[in-house]
Image (tube, rainbow, N blue to C red; front, side, top):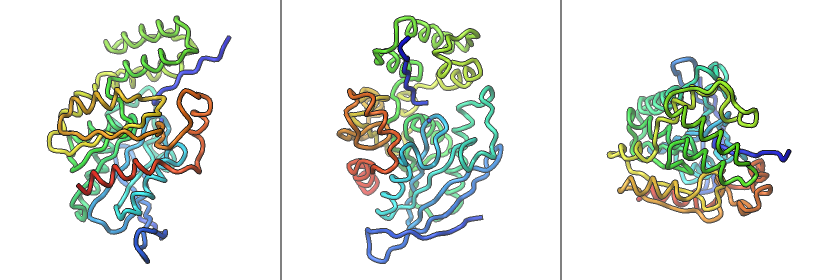
Length: 316
């Protein structure tokens, strides 16, 4: 049997100093930050130029570390800090340095992650040094960022490769796009998602679909599927919104960004040429194997155009 490939968007301060090239003799301070949340401590890194604007990077789905796949978040943080912004990135609960927070697959819900983001925003507001806070939500982190901002507002929100449709529609788009997936996989996926949309779980799941729909993760999927990003972004009436999407993204296509932009009339939309889902210039998505292999390249830089769009948005 041919291998079936299904790609889902499912990913006390110690101080050191790193150099920064934007201004001569400018030093960027790197701090380890610990933030108390409901079940433990979230741990992350703050790159600070003692700026009055803070950028928080919310990671995507799955066991995504603060550095991101291919070091994408690490490189983005460094590039933005070179522009003299303070930048915070973190390990999600149950991941990396935040493993102290136990994550039980059958018990975790979307709201656990969004409340963590709220606590992060609240923490930095209490620091009382930042005049502006920018939240960048990547992939799944786009929706989660929107939900958090509804309860804990910020000045700027950037959706980076974020879905514009509810997760059931996104999954079906991805499954149907993959020509290796036979018809029965498409049919079974539609049936399971239809049940989840109603809040009903499916006990018997095709082993080929376990990565998406195994029984223990279905309650989490139910908590996720009820949110429509296009509806949530409309609620950010007091936040300036930028939507950025790569045109070489095999997971989230441009229609998602367009949907978000069209439902949030005050937003800006920027398309980054040749940028993949992990924020880098990559082989064309039509060359699927090479494209996916680029996800694991932890040396190549992120797209320069992406950084410039973010900086221009904040400055203007």
